Image (cartoon, rainbow, N blue to C red; front, side, top):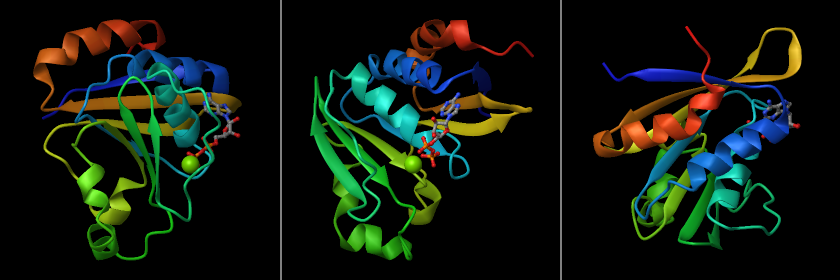
Length: 162
Ligand code: ADP
Ligand code: MG
């Protein structure tokens, strides 16, 4: 079983900072899957990841285009597949070419395209308790064993102790 570590943020700004910290560690070919209900904070986290790659421009959700590319320290491909009706559409549109390629792919609603890459960082966000501004972020790393320690150390300050 894959180890899952859970983190907690208590504001959108903290989630952005969490994302920025993780984004600094992203490398070409990395895939980050973001799951969680509407409003869980996937897009906030995606923006943080972009910040970590040095991208400072505004990042509207690519709801209708499904993918928006950005250029930072490395290319950054922001996917929002919420409106994808059919997984085949993802491949027919050639969007799979941007996953695991020359940049980092960050994908909201990856289940819409049945995406389960061999190597990825899977982050699952959820509201937490009665606090409107609190979120848990559960992270599972697949196929990134050599980088596990560096990623865990960088995120340690948000770690929710079991
Ligand atoms: P999603 O992309 O998952 O549908 P968004 O990131 O667009 O969600 O929206 C998350 C909303 O929740 C934003 O309005 C944000 O301000 C709010 N929010 C409150 N607390 C947090 C938190 N700790 N982390 C992220 N977003 C938060
Ligand atoms: Mg979103």
